[in-house]
Each structure stands twice: as structure tokens, then as C-alpha cells.
Image (cartoon, rainbow, N blue to C red; front, side, top):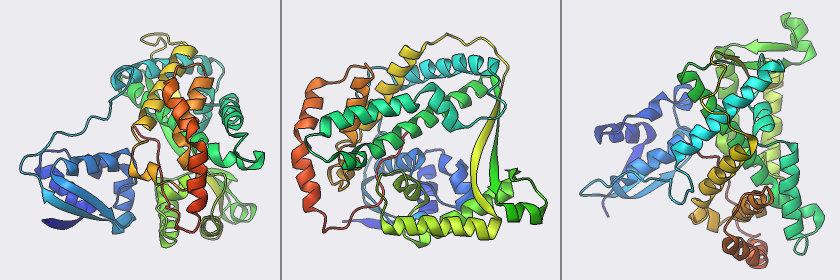
Length: 375
């Protein structure tokens, strides 16, 4: 087997020599940390490498990642198209969701709620709010009531809840970016820090303060160093916190992060805020909630379906990961969007066997990361 090993920077530079654009170097993660997060850009880089090599394996995390590339292909293969199985092409989905976001921004502007908001608040108002969470929890509880004690059922839906929240934010980000490129809105992004009383008095600042770019960079660098020293990537750390049950190591890492933020910066927490000003007051097309929700759910279901046959999914050891696809199917159906009933029935029929498999694997090491909200 012909095998070579490269650093992350080297493989990006290699893909450039093969005709790709090196977009990885333009990401915020690379500029701030000198390495990629395990997001859509990272996965696309893997796909690029698979155009050139038969086997691509990544070892390590963060800046310590090494890419093991085996068996160079005589002729490059095309970049994978991950849009398979969709009822609507990705471009059309995004147009519908962008017009829906524009439509809703107009009503939010009339309510005076765009001067300072967050992606989370917009996501709750537009795609996935508390009532949606209740639908997810109710549909999962109804399906699992014969298999698990009621107190254990949150461990089934917790990851899916996080995923839908993250997908809602992603759709907001994509729509705002597109509307801004079309000169229909202006978006200002900034971070707000919540400082403890002692630090605020000593520094003569207010408890809530807009953070500078340098302050944000220092805080994120501190968090990254702490979580990586505890064998998490930054992305894994955030995802694991979304689960209903966290490991002792994760909770200790979270406590260490909070202590460092307090001691080093006087910070209780920080959050990203946005301010939106509308230039174009009429959307290209008025999109109503039902059409937008159907599109959002079909797109999300398509993204998850593309993942369900992966090795990580098949080898999942946590209930929230093992039943991730089933939870999405249950929620989508409960929201009134059609799903493949045969596929849903098959997933339900596997509940008992999957729970047994999880129990039998308790003495094995549980893998850290799992899915993310893909583009």
C-alpha cells in the first residue's frame, strides 16, 4: 500500500495543486486557530482528498491532526454530490427558506425586535421553538414508552433537539448571508460579555459589554486550549454539552472552562448578538410558515438520511446517537410532513435490538464526537 502522511495545512495546499480553491484557509476557524473545525468545510476537504486517494484517514485532533493518504488514484474522481434523495434541489430549498426569513424579518422589524437579537432567538421564532421541542419530546416518549423508563427517555431525544436548534441557526445564517449579498439587508454581528460584579467595578465597565475582536479571540483560544488538553475538540465539547447525560470528564472540563473565564477575564458568559437593518422591504416572494416548515424539515431529513449508513452511526453507543435518525423521522411526521412509512416502521422495529446492543457495549470505550449540523 502506497501511503503518505500530511499535516492539515499540507493537504489543503495539495488540494490547491489539484485545482481546488483552498477555501479552507479563508474560514474563521483557520484564521483564528490555524486548524479546521469538524464542520462542513472539514468534511468537504475529506471529499476532495477522496477524489485523489482511495483511502483517507485522519488521526489526532485540532492542530495535531494528521492525514494518512493511501493509494493515489491514477485519475481523479469527481467531487461527491451529497444532494441525493432530496425531494427538492438544495438551491431551490435555500431560495424558499431565504424568502421566508425575509418575510419574517419584516414583521419582526415592525415589532422592533431586530436592533439586537441572536441567531437562537430568530431560530426559535422562525423554525424551532418551544412548541416544536414539545412535539419532538412527545413523539419520542410515545414511541419509547414500552422500552424505557420515563426518566431515561430524554437521553433518546436530547441530541436530536440540539441538532434541530443548530439546523435552525444554520438556516438563519445562510439566509441572512444571501440577503446581505443581494443588498436587501445589512447585518452587524457582535459579541456581548456578561461580567461578574467584582470585575465590572474594578475595570469600570458595565456588566454587559460589547467585546472587541481581540477579546473574543483570546477567550476562544483559552477555551480551545482547555478542551483540547482534556482530549476534546472545541466542536465535540459543544456537542457533548447538548446531551442529556454528560460524562464526568466533560463536566469537569466545563467547570474548568468556567473558572478560567472568571479568573482570566471576569466573564460569567458571552453570547453572539446581531443587529439587522432592512433595505429592501419586499421579499422576492412571500413564503408562509407551512411551506417554509415543510422545506426545512425535508432538507433536515435529507441531511440526516445521508448520514445514517455511516460507520459512526452504525457503531453509536449512546441512545441519543443510536436513535438519532428515528427521532428525526418521528418529529417530521408529527409536524405533518410525510415520511417513508416503511423506513419509519423498520427503525421502530430495531429499537429493542439496538437497546440490547447499547447495554452490551457498556464495558467498551464510548466515542466522543458524532453528527453535526451540516450545510
